[in-house]
Amino acid sequence: MSFWKKLFSGKKDKPKTESHFDKYRNELNELNLKTISDLENLVKPIITIATRLEVLSASRPPENSQLISHFGGQPYFEKGELWPKSKNGKNLEFIFQVFNYTDLQLPQNIELIQFYYDWDEFPWDTVNDGWLVKIYKKIEKENVKFIDKPSEFERSKYCEIKFSSTKSLPDWEGIDLHCNDASKLSCILNEDEPWDSYDQIVTKLIGEQDYQSQLGGYPKWVQGESTPKDTEGNSMKLLFQIDSEDNAGLMWGDVGLIYVFYDEKSGRTEFTLQCH
Image 1 (cartoon, rainbow, N blue to C red):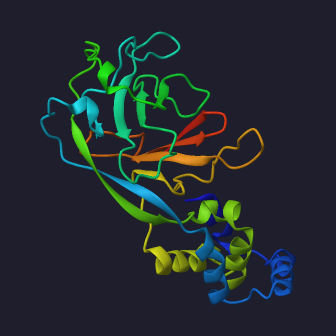
Image 2 (cartoon, helix red, strand yellow; image 1 turned 60 degrees about the vertical axis):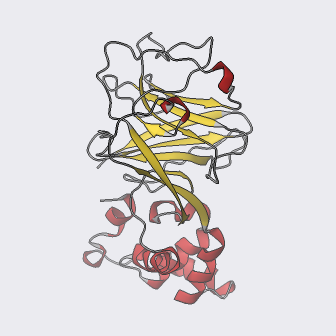
């Protein structure tokens, strides 16, 4: 159960804290925000576009798989590079790569992203060793190099990716971060289950949001809002989130997801894993 639903569960069994909702109601009345239509008008401007990653069934890798967006298989390398290692010197396992060739929701100054992971170390957060986001600002195809996968890794499933554009809104865990008035109005419209009003509007505007692998957009949290801040205190943008993907043989804990955020200005990346 999420933080908000834990907070409001069993509310009928407890004395109502009228002042909490009265404060919201008074603030919103001054802005003439009272109805479900007002909530819809608050939410519409924050709709953004994400790129959904559909991981296709495992297949035989083509000869040029290094130059294709895919999960598993052989990653792209250039001359002078070595297989990525963790800080303790252990080889990291290649998870996926995406070339920014088409209209994808990736920063324009990135041509290729890759992700590597240590399943034994199983890092959960940025501060943990055992994960790597590799970013190529510029790729030089004439310098492409084949590096054999380290012998300790079993042959991974090669899965190509189908990309599609999709609309994205924050989930209930994240709406307060992006539109505080929408969060407050949702609470006023349904004091017992405030997330219900917001979920209704999300479904009306963009359809039901489920967990998925995606580039850009807003994260859909498993255990609660955890968007990191940049050095100026602003929320970092989601670079990608990757779901547990059966076709690629990926399972993040108990059917969890990984989230990677990116600050274009500094080039800093932040990582977190959440699971049920």
